[in-house]
Image (cartoon, rainbow, N blue to C red; front, side):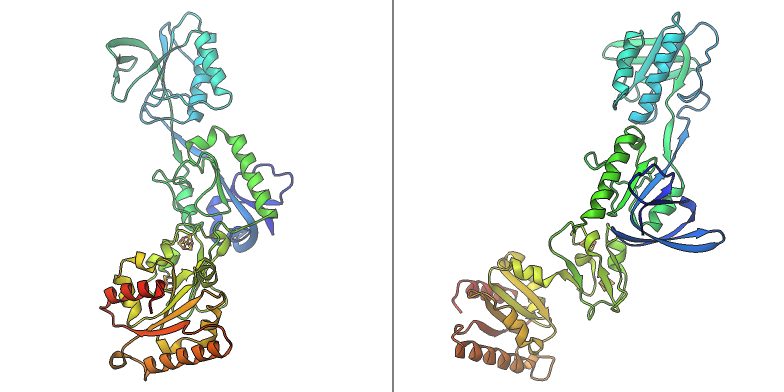
Length: 446
Ligand code: SF4
Ligand code: SF4
C-alpha cells in the first residue's frame, strides 16, 4: 500500500511512501480514500497497485493568444528603438502565474532598455507571494501600467495599439508581447473518466476554484496540483503541494467519514442498473463484492443524496440506525401498495417528527423490528396497511393487525404501556387522510 501515487510528475514526499504512473497508462481507479486500487499498463502488461491517496500533476499547454506576436515566454530581443508593449488578458483573464511571467519580463525590459518606454496593459492583475514585489519594482523602474476594459484595447497594426478609457484615448507604437493562453493537458480528459471526476468546463480536474482547500477534487482522496487544477494552480504551487501532503498525512492517521448519516443500498431492491454509479458526483458508489447490489463507500460519500433521488428502485436510503437516533419517538411502517404511495403525494412537512420505513406488506413487519423501534418510553409505532379488499397478499392486512395485537398484549403484560402500536388501513389516493392520521397520532388523539 502506497501513501500516495502521483499521476504525472511526482514531487518530493519525505515521510510518505510514493510511486508514479504515466497519465496515459492509467486504466481504472476503484475504491475510496484510504484504499484506492489503480490499474495501469506497465512493460506490455497490466498491473494493479493500492494507495491511500492520489495526486494528479500534469503540465499546462501554452498557446499564443495573439498569433504572429511574440508571447511572454519568448526572449526579449527588441530591434530598433521603439517602445515595448506587454498585453495581459488579451483573450481572457490570465492567471496569477502568467501575471508573474509578464511582470518579470516587463521589469527586465525596463532595466535592460532604459531608453525605451515599457507599457503594461492588463484587465486584471492577480498577485501571489513574490509577484506583488515584482509589480512594485516594475513601477519604480518606470513601467507604465494601464488597465483596460474588454473590447477597449485594439490592435490596428502589427506594432500599434489603440487604447481608450474614461475619456483618455491614445495610440502607441512599439513591439507587442502578449500573454499566452493556458490550456489543460489533453490527457486530463481521459483521466477524468478513469478517475470518475467531473471536470470543469475548461477541462481541469476541479469544477471550481476552492480557495481554502485548493487542490481538492470531487473525489475524496484525489488531488489536482499544477496544470491539472487550473491556471491558478501554478501560482502558489509550493503552498498547494504543502497543503496536499498535510491533508494526506491527516487522512493516513485519522480518516473519518464526511457525513454522520450513512447512505445504504437495500440489496433486495437494487436491480444493478448503475444509475447511482453514474449520478454520484463523488464516485462513492461501487458494485458490492459481497452482495448482488451496489454499495455506498462510506468515507467517500458527501451526503448530497443525488443517488437517493435518482435510484429508480428506491433502493438507497439514509441508514435506519441513524434515522432512529434522529427520531423523536414516532415511527411509522408504510405498506408500499397503499400508504407509501399516498405519502409520496402528501406535503412532506406532514411527516415531520416521524421516522418512516417502507415495507412490502403490513404482514411483512417483524415483531423484533417493532420492539427495536420501541426503545424509549415515548416511542410509539404506527403500521399502515391496505384495506382487506385491495390487499395484494393473502389476508396481509389481517395478519398485520394480528402482529400489532400480539405486540400490544405483550407490552401490556410487561407493564410497558397500552396501545403503543397501532394498525390503520389506507388506499393510495388517501393522502389527505394520511396527513390527518399522522397529525392525530402525533397529537396523541388516536
Ligand atoms: S449521497 Fe449518494 S450521490 Fe451523494 S455522495 Fe453519497 S453516495 Fe454519492
Ligand atoms: S440506482 Fe438503485 S437500483 Fe440502480 S444500481 Fe443504484 S441502487 Fe441499484
